[in-house]
Length: 510
Image (spheres, rainbow, N blue to C red):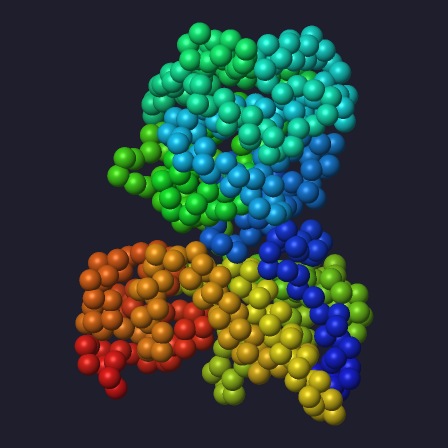
């Protein structure tokens, strides 16, 4: 490999981009996408619920479908995308926390059903740009609009905002005369929500929905006649309700049940949800009726192989024409050949980060050092590491302009990038997302990386019984053969955890 002088490296670093770790801000998302099996199954309409840890690519999939592929789905498959949440700014549902605090799980089921029908009425049926799709179903369209107006669903010429539709749906729920839906594992549940009529608790001057099921059935007739399908997309649900609250549990349990209310393949709910939240709302003491029906169209937890991470990194780095031309990289070969991707990767990174013939490759090192205790590596962490390494390398070349380098990113830059990523992961994930576990996690700061059972009991005290919680969030890995637990490399620099094994109660004093 040719040596690079400092001035050349500074120029090339200006062109080195791997995108933003947040999907909403990532301008490389579409052109550098990696089409995983979950991506393919989602586009083929085999999945309705996408599960993954934070940073694993759920929101990237949402953005790809909702923003970049919506025209393709409309033109080629007559599938209309309807966004049910705001993907930037404060989540709209937070504005109604006072109302949601009063909701039962049944209230939330009714809310979701009314809200989704309202969305469809406002953002599809009443939208001029979709009128040509319903040209062959004029009778069904008139019947749907007539029924919607009679039930006071929002039908007008201008599009309602999401916040106004949420407000409208919330306002209807307190007037509900509750009718159990009769959901059982053996029966396919139907939309059959009945609302209180005037004289039964609601003012006669305030007409409200009577039967959502009638509107649902008329909608299906309209869509069948038109040959149109609707996908209602929901993301950022981890920000919609207070984390780990009773409100979140009720709201999301009801949402998952609502997927069964819209069972027709003509209307699909597409839900992007963190795996830990999915587990917390489906696995509790009261159980979850018809969970097998929900799971039938649920993705496996998103996981990225080392080969997919390699493809992600090289796609992003060599989206730059400047870098492609300088290093002689061909995009077509990059898409088709894994060996070629590896060669391109090592035009940017050193072959190894440590001296010695038995050291792992840099790609293996990055993958291993971004892996949590459950074996999950997220694109967000890898992107954070490379971005931090780039900034460190820039500082180094600015300080030593007269120097030379054998790779654009040096060993020191990658190691420093990992340290910065780990510190960020501690703050934005462990502390921010798991506040209730943080007092336990904090006890591992400045300790050794591996602990036997006696060491853990001494470290955690009465919280030792919650060891499984630390394993489930990816912080502790059990090593059955050795009888120990270890903290993955992902978290060690951020928590100042040093290599070594802590044995027994007295080791902490050593």
